[in-house]
Length: 363
Image (cartoon, rainbow, N blue to C red; front, side):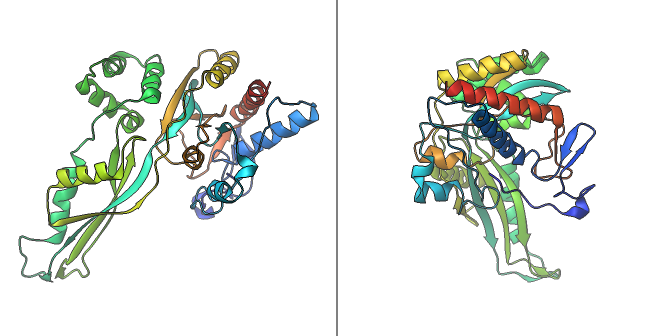
């Protein structure tokens, strides 16, 4: 996608919309989400055309909009109105995969085969209110606080699928000590749930891919500082595993909160999309190129915790693979943030990776 999130010049060290190369980095809004990959693809299509390369299957390049701020005029629109332009055996989304740098070294090359489902639930409590000088036990804010406390203490059950199981098998080779032992126990049948919980505490991403998660993100309540609240509410953002559903999460929230005085609704939920199958020919190509460019890097499929345009294609029956050779430092993630940047060397290595990948899957 070509669109980017907003950026306030006052927050940045320089103009976010002026491209800058400095100290081995490219700076600017979109340098790692995701104009870098748009440039990558355009450069490689030009290179292949210049070289006279003739692929054995059609290559379709789609540069789209409305990924960051809704999906009205992007991939969703193309599927509904001009599917003939993008219909394919499979798709590659450079916005959904890539490499991870840990402690200054590239360690993982992650291939997205699925993503979690996004949903917002609203908790709301009501009360007749009154003057704050005459407080009563039944307070809308206190009731909401109790519900949120119970929710904060709850953990959805751990469930692995084909992709997440392989992910932890690959991650196992990069971990040490107790974390490594816990991941081994997590992969056993039956699973050691206590070990799974310890692993989840070490890394928020480990926790997010092994279960459905819900987090409070917004609060509101009351109408005056000298009045008892008549209403209090919270937004709960849930990210569901691909095989989970709204009904199950709603029932779980009701059971955990266990208070008929707390109204629970779901004002928005995205749709589910199936996991893309782990195609051996695609994975073999990625493994071969990665081994040649980064011999010590482990290639692993993964499920993204955030949403991408891939969900529209998967729902339409087109498998999607999040593939990119761009590596980002996991301790310095700046996408959507201040002074967004990508390493110059990492950028050009990513361009070379994609050149080899495109040639390999079309030869």
